[in-house]
Length: 142
Image (cartoon, rainbow, N blue to C red; front, side, top):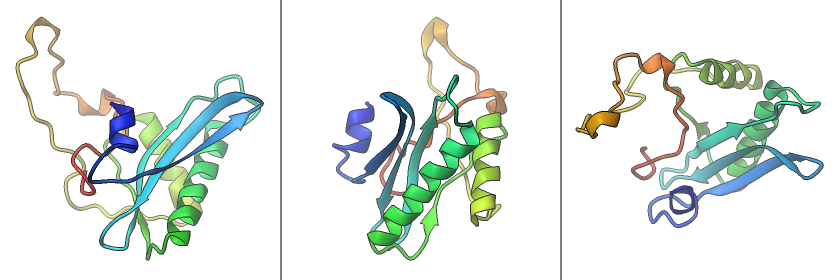
C-alpha cells in the first residue's frame, strides 16, 4: 500500500526523505510538487523512542527538509493538513508554527466513508482518538 501510494501512484510522485541515528530509522517524510505549483507535505512519521533526539527535533528536521525540497522543485508555497486533536497531530502543528506555518481553519480535513466491515467494524464516533497518517489517498487533493 505505502509503495503504491508514495512511489507508484499515478497521481502523485512523492520524494521521500528520512532521518537516521546510526543505522536506525527515526522518521521520514514524503512531499511532492502539485500541478498548481504548490508543494505538498504528503506524509510524516516519527518513531524515535530511546533516541537522543526528541520527536519535535525529528519533526522539525523533516518539515524543513520538505520545505527546502519543494522550494528547490519550484514550489510557491507548501501545504499540509491537520486532521484532529490527536497528540501527534498537535505536536506537528506546534512545530510547524515555530517554523513559520500557519493554520487556515476552513475546508474539510478528511472525508470518511462508512461501510460494513463485519464484526471487526470500527466506529468513527470519536475521531480525535484516531491516529491518521497524512498519506494522500486520492491524488493531489487527498
